[in-house]
Length: 94
Image 1 (tube, helix red, strand yellow):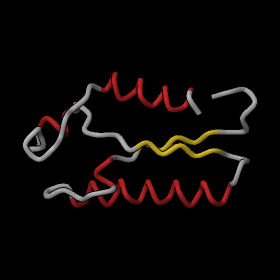
Image 2 (image 1 turned 90 degrees about the vertical axis):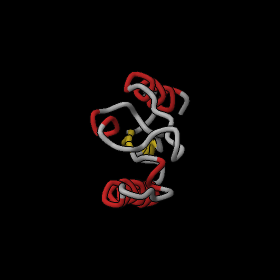
Image 3 (image 1 turned 180 degrees about the horizontal axis):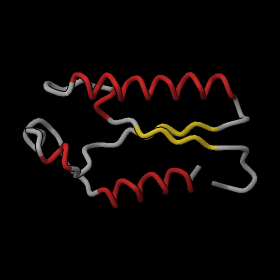
Image 4 (image 1 turned 60 degrees about the vertical axis):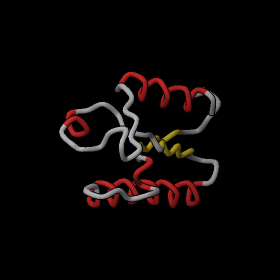
């Protein structure tokens, strides 16, 4: 975060928040809720507090490893390190 900025809240949603996938109904609903909550806070706070919403793809986690989500239904998994690097780049790039 830049020193001149007031504040920053970062929400990690998911691309699945934008398009539900079979067998991920609960997960998609929660991530959509996070995304909409962030959007509401963004509009409420104006410039006082910035809200960055991250819509990441599949991250290689135990949950994803135990699911059937893979290249077939369009999931390309990235490492947790790549996900963290992308979040930091988004913060850095404002």
